[in-house]
Amino acid sequence: MSSSEIGSASVGRLSPLLRWLGLTMVVVLGLQLAALLTGLDWSDPSIKVQAMGAVVTLAPLGFLGLLVALIGSRLDHPRRTQTPLRWVICLISTLLALGMIAAVYLSLAKPAEDSPKLQNLTQGRQAIAEAQRFREDQDQVKALGEQLAQAGQLATDATDEDKQRAAEQMVDSQITQMQEQLEKAEQQQSRESRQRLVGVTGSAVVLAIAFVLLALTAVL
Image (tube, rainbow, N blue to C red; front, side):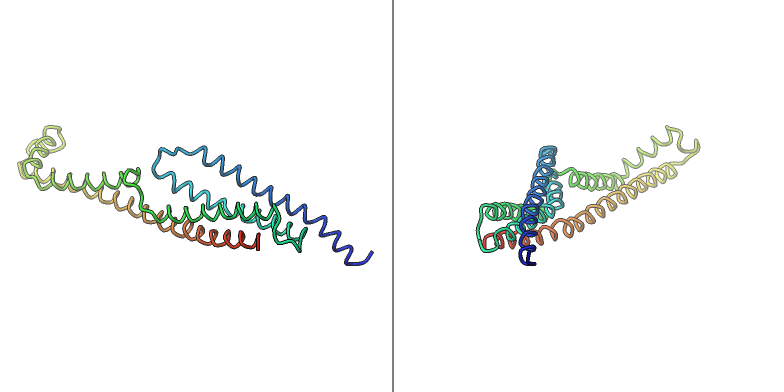
């Protein structure tokens, strides 16, 4: 048996294996996406961004599976440019490319006003503003000082100035604490935005281009 015949026989055994291996990976991707999307609480406004992030994370599995299946089809039919399997690969690649484009749009969109994180930041700013208004109202500060004295938190012989000073220090301490908490929350949101921009948006752009090229390669 000549070397060319041996090579043809090896390719003939390898190409079906590659096709089934690639299609198996695509099926696994579909099952994982189905489990992910059906298990999410879609009533949460921020769930769409999280879902798209998970889809982008799983998308390389689909790309690899489609690529392996396409290689198997090319080895099996090197002279045919279009086969049913290649049209299937083109269709799935196109759908995944559209999914990546949707992921880019969602990752760049501003968070909804009713998202829990944005509501927490808004409530934190409102609480600080109310505390500052309370601090500027001398009557309320004086009343707070009287309450501290009645609660036994001040000396029995505390003067009005002592009561007012203690109330001011208490309010100032609370304002400082709330501002620190708000700054930490804003920094956390900023870090998450940068991570989403690099991890989701950047990956989705690259994958969208890759899926488009794969779809064109499958039928051209």
